[in-house]
Length: 260
Image (tube, rainbow, N blue to C red; front, side, top):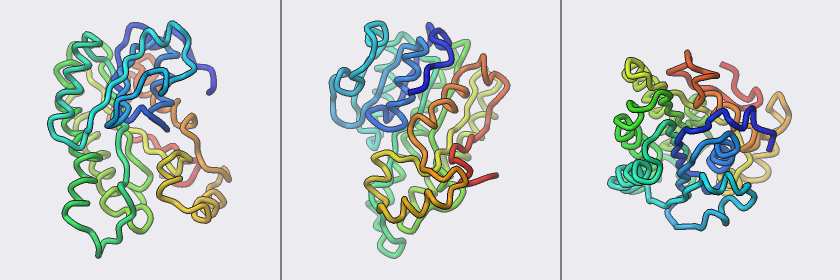
């Protein structure tokens, strides 16, 4: 991982990162720790030891890491997670909504109500509930920031079989802008990062090697992204010292795959 901009950039700040058990969320949580934050890392539905998820932290970083599990597809889980953040962190300055996945490629004609509900509950409803529930905590912060993870598919429509996932991410992008306008008077900034094709477990699970090879060839930078490629955008949007006049924005991180 590239060296952090400053080991004190987030000193004294408290962050909740969902979906931090792997991929982009894990890389962002690790970077926040390296920059001085205290982090509550949500690692999915199964409890895992912090040393298992983040095995190479310094002693100082490990002391500022708390790990928890929650099934965010369940309605009560978001509120419980925020209660954990308040109890264990003493408040909240940064909310990174990164948890989400496609739950399989399903052709539109085969879409069931159950699949639709599962995808939207995790990728859209949980984000809404976490954002809404975090507002009282973020109002108490002098550096309140929400950074949501959307997707390039929110703009392009994604590949076949991802219609509901892509639509859910588009919903989150619009919700981000709406919240930014609403919460600006409270000093809470709301933005999003939109990764392109990032080589994480998501694409190992849902994309064939042939599809990934063709995608990489079509990207102007001629490679797929990495989780670490995305980290800088999250740190930028979370830090008022860097982006204090930035709100309601969706930053595309895709190597030129989409230019808009």
